[in-house]
Picture (tube, rainbow, N blue to C red):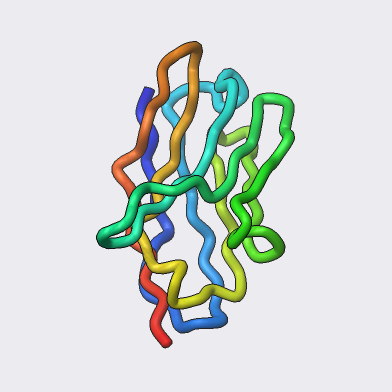
Length: 113
């Protein structure tokens, strides 16, 4: 399984970005997929998840601003709005298939004030 993130970049506070995660497998075969992020000097933290059945969940800081979704092109998305400086991090997508969790290489999101 390969996961490739894209869509990161530099954006001003209050702006928007949409991250994509392209999977090499049928995206609906994964038990759960998610977006995580890791800021410099901090631990990786969960941002949002989406289950095989389509249920979504969000980390507190993402609620109301981020939206996780997927489509039949085997791509998962993270739409991020009203970005804040503290959202600056490397964003990773993950996918659970059976007992194995796969990770992408990450995409950098930098929010300037």
